Length: 362
Image 1 (cartoon, rainbow, N blue to C red):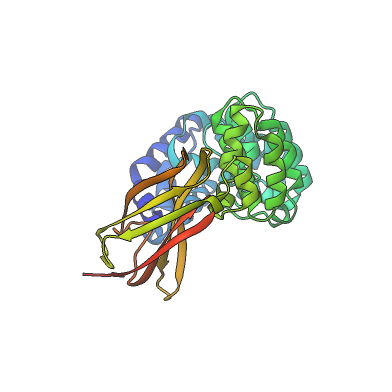
Image 2 (cartoon, rainbow, N blue to C red):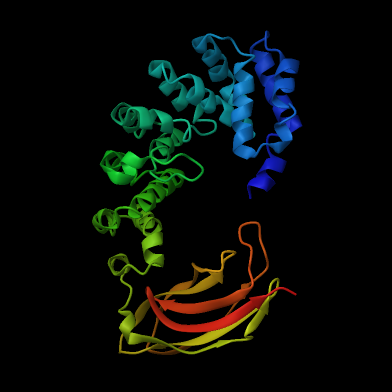
């Protein structure tokens, strides 16, 4: 995925346009020098995140040395900068503004209206969590939805692509007042971040998140959606307390019969078909979360499971037939390896039936 982004973002054209915007608002800006600094001999070998940082460092070399003056220029151009070049603005604050919070933190709030400051805020949190979170708590009440979303997204303990916050992984208490403020936010963009933050927290403190979700669930459609999305990791792991929040039926009364696979050897690139019958006993309708787990063979010769959702539905007592397929085509996010694989049908977090097959290359 990073290779694809690397080839399609931060291009010669987009960075040149970025330089034109700066030049328009800062006449002394040396565009030619900036482009030479960016596209040096090492540019092609750099990965995407390295390129972000390199653009920021190059920008620093052609803006005024005085931080406040440079920041004024970046604040002025922020509404006009699009694409990944916009990341250079909060990144500039992260690199060169740690010693001036009074200028830097309001600047991050401004930049996040047009791109995102979620990565740049994290060194400030690591440096002084209490002080940084005082800003974040205020931003959770901001009129701008991007700023409110930033208040949650920026303090996620396990934000993808960003440095983790070990203190919040250990004790997420400082995050919770922000999430409480945002749980009924009118913006789905904001509520999704709340759910993702809770999902992050659940990986270290599942019982805490379950307690919050139990309190929130059932009060509004907005919070119900947050709770469902926040519990996704725990639901995949079959955590019974999480399943109970959503009223899933006791899996002991549900069986999976006649699990069949269309072949015992699958060639990489082909589709794999499987079928089974879901037998629901009792006299009442059952709410069912139906998934399948695939134990993939990894390059190191060990298996690693990935859970895939089949459906969530209610079923009357009786037998219900399913026929599904799974693609074994290689993708940028998943490469397949030869060896034994297992497929397991999972009902409400409980494994019900397993079949094994081999995967090979042509």
